[in-house]
Length: 392
Image (cartoon, rainbow, N blue to C red; front, side):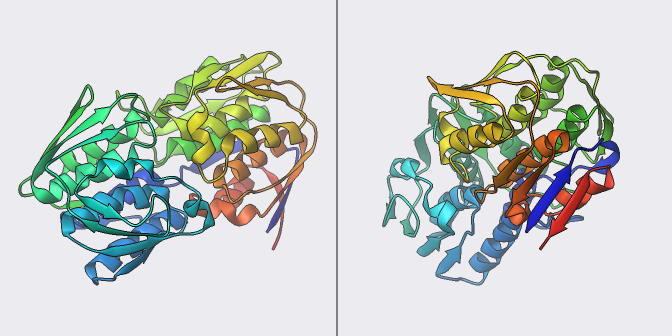
């Protein structure tokens, strides 16, 4: 699919796409207790989680993870607790991702440290695991220990993406579990859990691409269906970061209101704990005439694409000067030019390119890759003023 975008003005109201992260966690929660979701996200990654849970219940010996690294890393310790021997595989983007942290699950046997692999063995009552590669293993261990009734996780610093560990603890505690995350230790105690019925809240990282669209086009937007910003550091920090960049940005009772003010300040942000915000932040930095910096970008190289490379290539396509050095992406923004980007099977890069094209015009090839997280992205953007032509 090819999406062509002309310079537009983004105004109106849009519903934030349901959170992929919360959606997957609620789906996996159904392995622990009864779960009824009022709005199951339509993203490919959540569909993968649903199929994996179905496969576990049916006793399948092979499970396909598509491109969902979250489901892959979280399901491995769960399978160990269930005592299953299962072959796991995924698409080419998932096969490229390393699984180095598997070596810390010492009673388990793994046929490889990348897909395809066979998982078998057991899970110890306490696991010590490094926290740098991905917090998703730690979230999976929380679910696994909840299934066992309890356990302890000692995380070897540095710990990345702490907000997602807090999110997992929040989901388990919501149904009566006791998960405590302090320092570098996670304590899990679970007995009889209550049922869960509710709605998957909107996703701040995905919603930020609509917010960016308003800022890049001199517009104004309201984004609904968001959860109140929690007190831990997570993707919701984008609300304040956009305010720091010069925009009007605030959340009132689950609605995020964003308006361009004509002021575009440079930013300097570490994405170690919020790696998924990097493509969105790069968009805002692209229109600041001074130097902005995205710091601690090493982990971006093992996402759906090498995002250090794909973010810089996308920016350069739209005429933005960038430099990668010492674990940082330096961006000197200003006036954008018309650009063209072929989606490298990475949903966030396609959305990033779409935002930049709203300002200067452009084309996104293989634009259907947004289905991984927000299949309605292009339609929703058009409803709030984007001048879009879609060619199948």
